[in-house]
Amino acid sequence: MAASRATGRVATGAGAPPDRLWVDAGHAFERWLGGDPAGLDELVRLMTPVLWHVVRAYRLPQEAAEDVVQTTWLALVRRRTTIADPAAVGGWLTTTARRESWRVAKSDQHVMPAADEELAARLPADRSAEADAVENDSRSRLWHAVDALPERCRRLLRVVAFERRPDYQALASDLDMPIGSIGPTRGRCLAKLRVALVQAGEI
Image 1 (tube, rainbow, N blue to C red):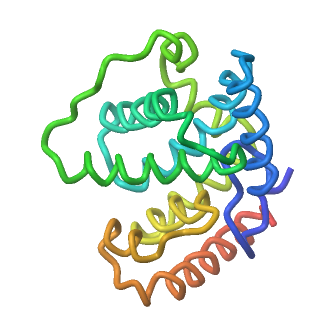
Image 2 (image 1 turned 180 degrees about the horizontal axis):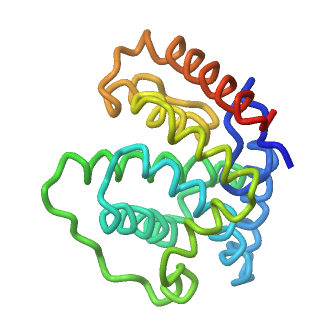
Image 3 (image 1 turned 30 degrees about the vertical axis):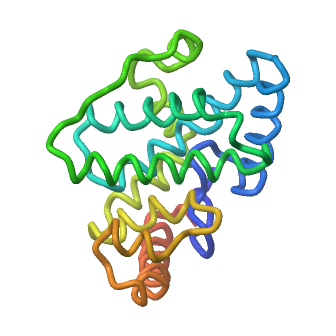
């Protein structure tokens, strides 16, 4: 199966189109809020690969990146009642992961809070979350092509691929880029990605 076309948004780590992923995540979150524990399992399955891609854009060490992903899920467990619209949970998670990544990247101390019992049983015990992100062969080849791009492209694409409505001002600060260059840079990076995929025979 050929890798997804690079003419628009980069394909999501969970393998679904971005809008479909957000809808599915919202439904899973709503089930969990309604008292179905399986809803949290499904939400973790859908969104953890996405969070990994967002976090990796900040060049954190592996251990620190794992801490950020887990901290993001813990934040959801503790603040779930503050999310009025279940459909917004995907954006809430990616924004939280991005902010926590930025905070950790600026700090020399990587402290991990104790896990809530409810979430601890559902979090991946090892690198299975990231393995899920590349399990599908097509997605694996796509992100391999992304990783071969220049560093600025790698970081930018990993973030904007999963931000439904990117906050360009915050991204400019996080990625140390002029805000006016984010859009044009994203376009050039997608063009480079498309060329790489064409040359590899993926599209």
